[in-house]
Length: 113
Image 1 (cartoon, rainbow, N blue to C red):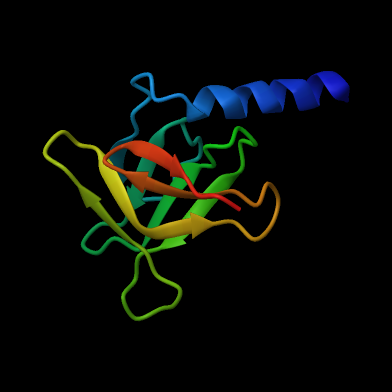
Image 2: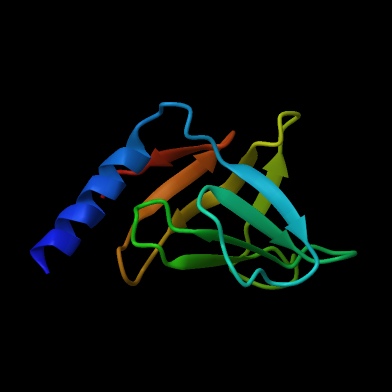
């Protein structure tokens, strides 16, 4: 129990380091069965409908963000020329780890609680 908690804390601390730990985008037509770390999956064929990625805190839970304009809440994802994603607005998890962060140009920016 204590070892698992220490591992989660170390993962979270490591994920906060800016040492080239950039995120990238993969566009897929169906929901991914396996979600890789630091990868934002944009799901949809003609229209993107969801973005899926692992929470950057280290809890390894998947986050699903709605991209459909007619539904709320809604996020948007832009990709720069280097393939690095920006998600807007911020992601504020209300359950589990309760992380609050921004993903900007492939980097996580943590928001204060």
